[in-house]
Image (cartoon, rainbow, N blue to C red; front, top):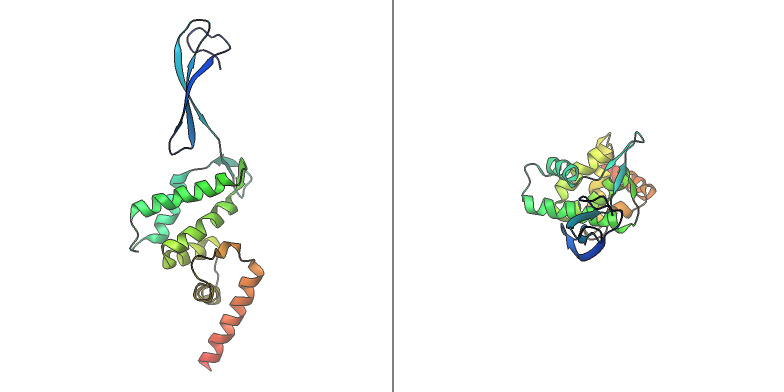
Length: 177
């Protein structure tokens, strides 16, 4: 680490502490050349690869904005949303990857959102998974009813979801007949 005072190219770590909910490390350093002390912050960068191929740093605020829209009008408080965003970030950092595709962020949001509020989950899933018809909603609702909320629906293979949609739409047509 270069000393910001004398530009000496080495320094000694005097103290290290976690900061910002453990996502950063604050180090107190001392320059052996001039004796001045200074602090540094170390952050593990988590980059998101967007569909366009561009990368950008992970942002809890972007997670919060998307989830707030899904929770609009629902009995969900801001503290729960902040906790959800923190859980999503921890899950993504827990993968050990420095770059994560945007699709994975969406999948990481689905499970904790379902635990928080199933209506908000359905709203978010409808946009995230591009529901195009009533059958898409019926299939997802059938899944919500079939699986307890502690099972991560994001872990269900999409083929199973399609089968569920087919059986849900056949059940609906039998009811209507």
